[in-house]
Length: 67
Length: 174
Image (cartoon, rainbow over all chains, first blue to last red; front, side):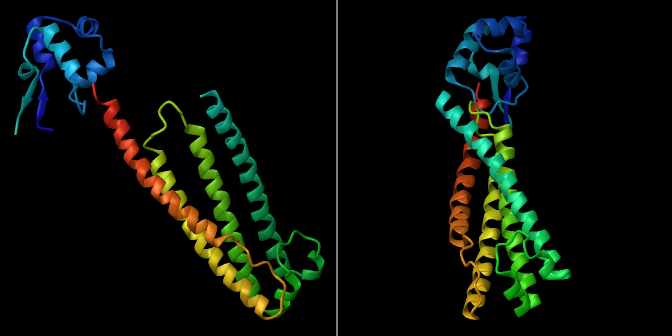
């Protein structure tokens, strides 16, 4: 899929662990892992909003389009 | 939800009974048919029968063999369909019923039901031919019902396949 999820990059920049993020955005570890590894088929606006708020970033920092 | 669970458990038990019954029926017809064909039919006069064996057998051995083979095929396919339904019940989880492994099983059941319907139609044709010759044989083998069931089940399997895709998408939506 040409949409790349850069969640791990942003997490590294913000120095936040998966456990901390899962507590902040109220998502299970397995769901966050699915998102981080790029296995997710879709992402809800509410989830994107919560992640952007927790990581203090823009959606474009997490999602990237590569041809 | 409890009522649905109870209904499903009852149907599961019923399908086990149907499966065992159909297996016994198929085996009985097969064994009785072969014994009458290769050994003296008079010796196995009182064995399980669904056809007026002696008249058909004495009329034509080939026709008798074909007739028994058709009946065994229809009954065997019905019991295999019952077995496939049981395998679905064994894996069924009502909280997430659209499992990807069920769609091919449903398609297979519809194909087998179609095949059983075709063989049942041939059996009905043979029965009508025997009746035309003055022999008394049953001529209801459920061909129409099996073909109707196959058609409905094929549509259900196609819809189920789409449901499976939707559930997978839903599970992978974060």
